[in-house]
Length: 421
Image (cartoon, rainbow, N blue to C red):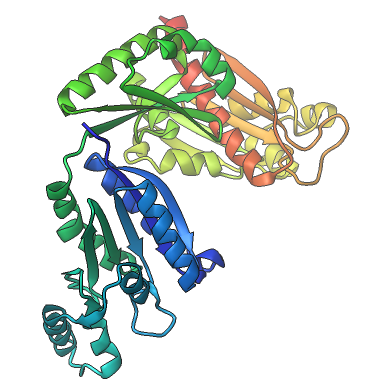
């Protein structure tokens, strides 16, 4: 089956200036993907006749479907409609159905249709009108030589309604498409290059119609398997078979799939083993607690937390020994060891975890430069500490520490249960 390709054109200087975030393209490409249409390019175009016409020509050479948002308003700087008229050599004429719907729309709002708004019902003669029940700018559908141009408003809720009600169903009628199935495998605790080396043999033996992509992010690497065919159930079965093979070499790094998050995986583990947890966060300032409590049902295992940012609080509120801080400093294995154990005891939890570090961008020393962080896990059987050497960016260091601590819980808790048993 021939692959159907789409290109998305977003028109507007406000996006190029960075004044407005383009969320339309992301949503549209996901919708196209769900019906087996692959988006091959997304382009943002300025409010310029020459640039818009050039984008039309180039997109038509590459893609079967060209989806356009923006530039359909009633003012002189809205150029999409006149550019479509010029590109297709089709005069703009009044569309009676569009005029009827526009008149009814204004009437429902208790307003009169003025001449400027009336012109919004004028469309290229070669086009079909797409109704817009949520706004005044109707959409435009043009089909020529097997290629489809669709122009829609840039207002997200108006565009989404058009796509859902009209554009997606009509594209499905116009094109016979493949089925595209994605599966995301979430890994943690291993870098992209090391993971690639670990799973190389598995990757090399993937079927030709199943493609692998590496998607690294903060502390994690997502593996995306994309299968293309004509039977969704068969594709799902094949992908699961490949995941089963992957588990034999990389299971210890895999914590979830698709929309799973590490804090949710840790929460599920705590529920499974019937354990509670408490946190003492210094350099992370409560960020780990925020992640843990963002999971619905976390009250089943989350006991509470303390943010002993100042040494006085570490001593008087948490119970860290003053001698420990004097001898080793706040950012040390000895201090974080005590923090994890004291918070576990104070909150009567099964597990205590702690963070202490130099988040930056200042405060580092030659012995403890910015990015030096200690984390700890303590239960009734053992205490485990880890030293992290991170970066010079405060926000990144906080997030990276949180992920490392959650992963330490994920790794250590099952082993602790095994030791006890």
